[in-house]
Length: 168
Length: 120
Image: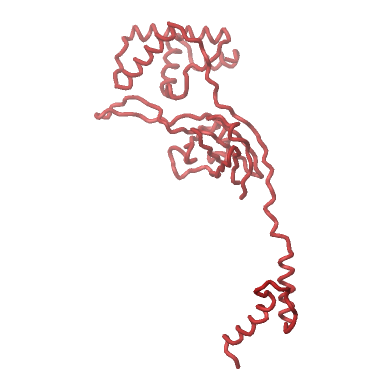
């Protein structure tokens, strides 16, 4: 009885003949029926098309949501002064100084800006009330909206009704 | 999972979004600070369109040394908010801002030249 090593060496011999180091066509000389079957099987495997690729999925664009477009306004001396004032107030606020303006000055500025913004909106010149979402927080906005409504003795439900009727 | 062509990078301005359906998945693709991010458009709360609401900066409260508040401020981290009930997710990770264990399914985005692909 031969050892497993001997058997392996014998089995490998015909395969070497088939492939041929010089790339010669395989000869069936000395091939057993099993070797021939294996050879044919290997040929057929090689002829099979590659495994089918994953079918391409359909890509359907549902919506495109654009980034908000900034509103371009012409510069003027009043706007430049307002920007300087806003920057100065922001700098003071960042430093924890909440008393940069007197209540009277805050009220006057708030009223002027409120009227100016409302007039722009009613004239059809619509732009966001703040430049970007970094400008104020949701809490800031709610405090100011609530204070403005209270100042003119309006309730939130009246604001809702007016918005739904006017479409503003 | 295969790379699915979504569009040209030049068609996405910073801040733009696109909602696409790929097979059975609905995916929101964001361009934020030059990078692309893609997440499942199904909110983990109640299945709302998670990627179609506001994009808003993260809010933090700054305190003085004596712990008194200096007010709420926006940070540079951007979040997006499901428009149905306000579930808020981190733009870069897809994690819920409060509970990091809640995380939207994230899809890899590959750019090859000017072409943008989502792996889905």
